Length: 92
Image (tube, rainbow, N blue to C red; front, side):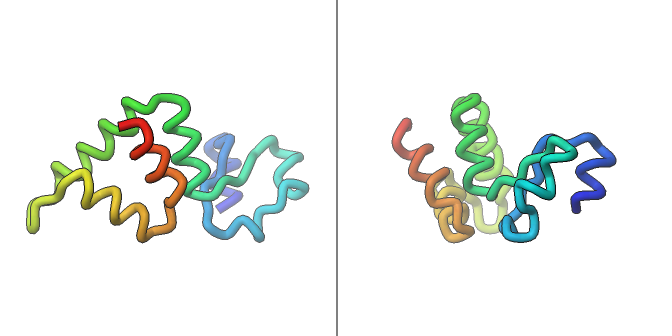
């Protein structure tokens, strides 16, 4: 994963396995590792409207069965994005 991040000049590696991406190992390449929850919270702080638009777009893409925004938030929560969901719900 790090090789791919370096090849495309990524600034962030999003991973649930932060233990394998210590800050000291990434510092030479100016790459940072973030958990999925932290990454989404960062995106919410950058532009909440865009993130909400993405959540609505995901809900609208579910056809069988149809999805709602609450369904998407529930799925995100079950996937461990607890802070991101709380952040989105706090600013509805």
